[in-house]
Length: 493
Image (cartoon, rainbow, N blue to C red; front, side):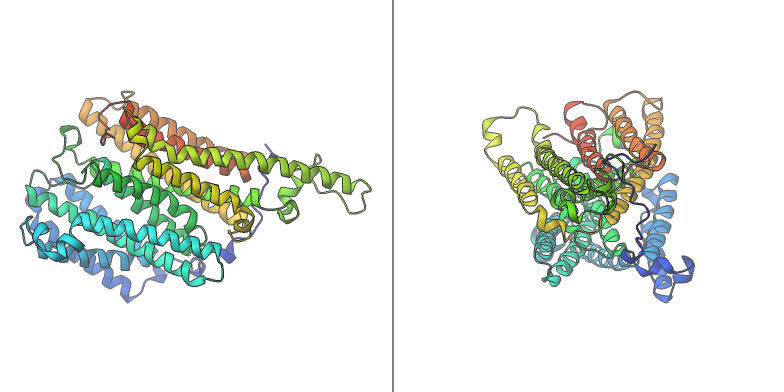
């Protein structure tokens, strides 16, 4: 199948200018240096100490998971060196908090350092503030390109938020065991904890793409979905008090949770990145005049699939018709983007039972209103933003790679979930609502990848599909838990 009118083939465009230099190196191992070796040794030593200290609390499966986790951390930090600084600071903060607690959870309420800085809840608050400030800095840098320091600052603040949030989960894990050995568990068991995990995984994958493609402009778009998650997280902890650590329900008392949930949220995070990059792609498209579009896009409006020759007597009329088609299409897409943006921000509101006027008049009304203003601002500034966003080919490549990575991890998570179901329920698949919607999400992105790889789908069609995919993924994550009860419920709204 050839490329359709709304999916021009952009593959011939060279992306090497946008990619970081380390990809030119001949092999992975040839890049290793003394710092990499030291990091690996320190990581092994730290985890070995923790394992020896808590050996009695671990079964054979958890020991295997621990070894695999150590090897994964080392490999990832070797592959992308900024992670060495992230893991290093997380270790320093976490060990500092453990030392401050000194085995007494009550110190979290009496000690200044823990109460305001290094206990899990203050760290979550610092993460939230840093992510919000980082997003604002990204936007200032995008709107005023001369303020290059702001984009740099946005990246640094986002890295700091990543460190704070990761340390928060590590400290929270320790706090659970301070309550009681049978209460402690990996902090991925409820809605509060997995929203933190979602924000962190989305952020770390974005920061990798930021360095890999040498562009910071997308931070303004991608971090919006992280800030939206932070907004929900703040409401969930401040108004509902859901930050309290509770014992695991029987359905979650399994070592499968340690690998199934993180793999699942790698998928959710990268699918969200693809959606926001798709949004940026569409904003660039609707904001760019016909004359400035790549030739492949211009030719897609021609009945013949090619631009008219300069010597063609009918060229002016043909070009005028093509420009009119572009104007009509961008107008329609702008309306569609407004509606989709509104739906994405209203999605958490509809995932609550018993919505009342009082409920809508408070926090969530502000949440929804702010979302509409943000989407409206972006669309009003689409012409200015179009010139500042990365090339279409770069956006298309990031979108594809994010979905491809997410699809792999989501597939692994689904398979692991089937094994967990067999262990818990006695059968691999029972058409539980979460399983059914996980299959829908999987089929959605499988179809996206199939059409891209086999039919050459590119352009606005793939970008719009990626954006709509976030609505489907959002329902699979939140809506199923709230409306369709099952063993996968993380919490209620």
